[in-house]
Amino acid sequence: MLNFFAAELVDPLLSSANVSQWTPVTSDNDLLRKLIHAYFMYDHPFLTVVHKDYFLRDLASGRHRFCSDLLVNALLAQAYKTHSKMDNRVEFWNPRTLGYQFSAEARRLWEFEAGRSKITTVQAAMLMNISYSENGMDKIGWAYLVQAVDMSHDLHIFDTSTDIKSAEMENVRAFTAWSLFNYQTLMTYHFHKPPLLKGPPNIDLPDPVQNPGWYGEMWIRYPLSQTLSPTYFGLGFQASAAMQVMKNDMGLEMYGNLSGSGKLSVAQTKTLFQRLTAWFDSLPGPLKPQRIVLPLHFKIHAYYFHIISDLFQPLAADPVTATIKFMGRTPQEIISYALTRMETLARLYYLRHSFDYYDACVLQFLIPLAYSALSQIFNADSTTPLARLNALRSTLVLCAKGIGDQGQSFYIAKAVFRMIREKMRPEDHRLMNRFAQSKELEDVEPLISHHVQSQWPMPIIRVDRNPSTNDFEELVKEYKKLSMEGEDEEDCSGLEEN
Image (cartoon, rainbow, N blue to C red; front, side):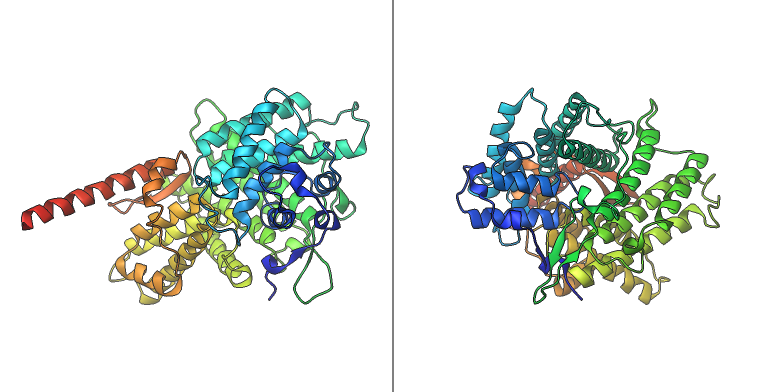
């Protein structure tokens, strides 16, 4: 089986680009090109921000139409985390790392761009939001996303404009509008906030089969092969956009009204479930369940089942609605089905591509799977079949490994891994150490509370064994408090012995 992350993105524009002209951080063009290559391989397919072809063309030519110093430095700061050869790439606070220096330069340039709305500045704001969010500082990063939306309104990119005479500018404006819509939907839905946009751009996406160039297809070459393979980027972008439209509608209904209850009615749930199912059934050939291969394809499917699970959680928790059947299944049966499919996708993803490479989006299904397994293990008793218990432990170890591996690239994963590890029973912890060796985190433990400014929603297994949801920052404070209490107890016991 071919690992996508072992492949090479083939683009002559990148191989000849003098990237150092865009940043004062380093003049090592070979390194800079590797970083940009890593960004397009790891981040770009799902968290799309720039149009690859137009960006790379201006990057190589030195033109400032679809490229800017701010955009390049923001992109390099994000790319630093994605490059597996960068030591200490998770230490975003460390001024000696290139990642910190790219970020500092981007922040400096951002000050100069204040008050000026440009396509490249909108894109840079999205990248800066991504970086802050992955480092557990989404409270700070949120302002960049809000400003990206505000600037986009200033530029009127969400509607077709007759004033734009350049076909290239028209394409980039439309592409950026859809990229921003998709991303703000992803973030507002994840953080349980009202969407920043009431609906998608008033611009039809072209057929990716008839017009793949509009999207900027990614062609890759695997080791020992001379053949170029498409990634079907356009198909993935279009399918993801259609899913984000439904998620945005769901977010508006759940968080966009005055009540902000976070719940949908039975009728609303049924309608959205039908829309999601119809979307899934109509996925194009390369994205069909039996044909998915690439990380982008796995994530589209995993997000679909994650939404399905979220959709039915409130109904399953209410005795009045728990017995209602949707397409022949109760809410809990649908949730169980969705979680099973997510687990299958996680295992297939690991077998084909491993978790060794940066992919922040896998946390969206690894975290709920890990906590679901933890919850069921804690609730197991003497009547639980051993085979079932072993299966749950296997899932827990797999997810913990994936989160721990991602923790080598970005901070939120590293801290989440530490918390999951602390929730494990001793025997499960030992099992994880056998099969999922992950770098210990004691070196950054004192820094967790100091750096985290996050509202990242986290499930937690409480002492009463009832799953609930807390903000990540609150869990960090709780964890720190428990650690300090533990230290105090040790000090007291030492005094008593003396």
